[in-house]
Image (tube, rainbow, N blue to C red; front, side, top):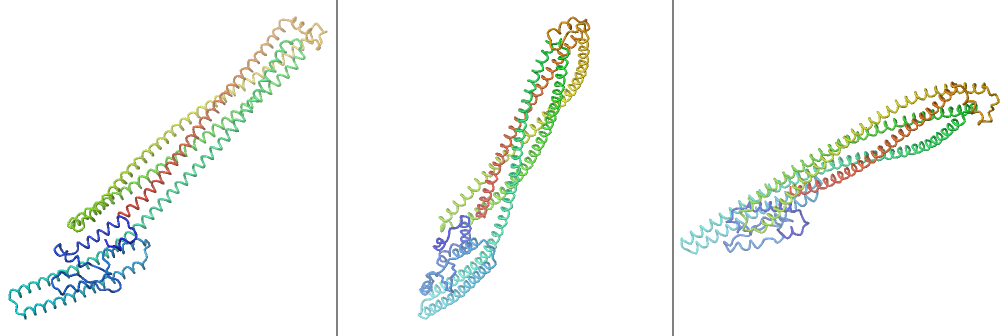
Length: 580
């Protein structure tokens, strides 16, 4: 390598290998090893500013030594010129016509310069042949022996033959140099075109990944908004349940008051008129309370039905989200498999091209081990390092592909698990719907019982009116409404029919109390069912929130893995470009 090539900017190892290969091909284009010792002095050079080139000739005649001394010290080797052309083409990635025209003009000038050098060599050859002929003429004129003339003639013929061989080798080297320059230009154009295509593919892949990321972010935002909305709705439901519990406590207090009123009625049954008024009032209050309870039960059933419908809608929405996530995961899996297969194919082609380059380099280097052993060993070491790096990269890609496939399988299993849980929730909601239907039927039965109870209350009111009429129309006319203690004795002394009516009244009152207790127990059971449903809904909400967080984490991990794969893809493309 020349000192000018060392002072330039650093190039990549792949470029160094290509330049070294071109130099060896130029060196191998010279004649066989018998004339390389002589042609080591005759280096192919390109000169700037119209300077002449000179070739060092073997010491056949003493007149050839001044010709070799006239070589210019400012000659630039062909290898350095090739390196300059390649680095200039690689430093300017833009496909400019002006730069190509300039390079063609420079190459044409160099070819014309080499032709001028060839003509000068021909002129120098004719001069040398003339000098040899003069020397032979002088030797013949001096009267040398025939043996000396024959040896001089033989020596002259050998020198002419060697000059012809050198001139032919020089012409062949110039022709090969022109072919190599043309091939290098075509290869640089192909390399630039390939770089542009790879950049376009990389931009398309980055745009696709950005679109996927935006869609996933929008889905996550919508899911978080829905979760916040469900939390607010659950808080409102808890407030309504607390208010209903307070109302239930009030109703229990009212029921306790009614039981006290019933006890007073049982104690002061002899006060018929006052008992009738209090009983009618209590019956009116009881009917109002029952109507209110009926309305509350109806409202609670409606709210429960509304909640069940809303939960079903939420489950369906979650099902749709799971389906969309599954579709996106399948798309991601196909995209990752496609990109990995493409990259693997590119790695295989690069490894094959490297293997072919190594074989060709080994085939071209083996005849020239003696003059350039150190350089060949250095190139072999670099190529072995590149092959090792390529194999390591391929193994890493295979491992990452296996990891991505396992992660995609895990995500599909999680989607299946979510689907099974959604089916279980659907069955639970169906069971809740059946329980609500049973509650509605029980409410209808309770309504029928309430109607029967009202009819019985009407009958009881009629019996009480008849009792009051009997009390007012009894034998003792001195009974007043202001003495309740003295009004019980005439009623106890009435006929057995009055006693039977009183016993019937007491039985109806006890039956009313039993029915109120039954209604209270049913109301407590309904409230317990509401609490159980609320706790189940809260557990399901927490489970869904946890799963949504897990899905968000998985999405973030997938996004990070995609970014890493894009970076690795870019790095592998750059390494492949350098190797190519």
